[in-house]
Image (cartoon, rainbow, N blue to C red; front, top):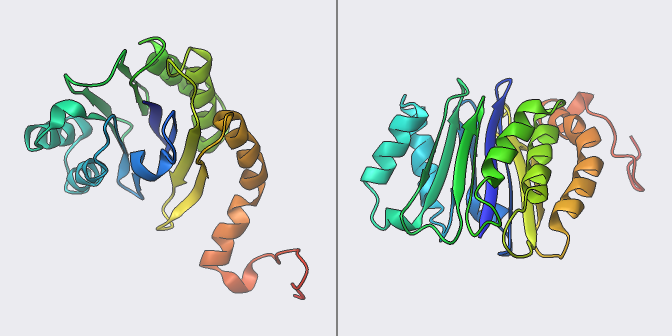
Length: 222
């Protein structure tokens, strides 16, 4: 009930995702600074995203990490997984019991997958859009998500969307979610437009609070 893309750009990792289920970003997105990005979806077991990142952190490549998790996980035929590492290598897996029309694709520094799709080519459209888009990682991830929706997205309407990234700071510098509404991808685009110009200020507040800009809201007298 989900389509997503995991990607790497310039030492940063991110995932964009949309679904007919509520709060999809809370379950599918797994990021670790300096390590990689992993998406776990389709009758989701969020523990698998952590397991993939643990394998990457231990030195495995995406295919090796994915094969190890698949081989060692009960009920893996219900799961759909993608993983990308710091070299830009990527791998995907769709179990035999993945729901409905499904597909997966990889491209330079990205991997996409989806289930219950209107068209199995949706993930390939997402990877192509990511490769051709310019801008920051968040902008390229959103371009890929929008391309997936334009290529058909899910067979039915989607109601939630999320976009998250991580850098070398130790936390997610972008972590946006639209958890239940009829236009989640459009709402996510508006939210990203509000957030992205402020992102670096919030990173600065965490790293160097004395040098950080003021909040510019009532009650801030700095």
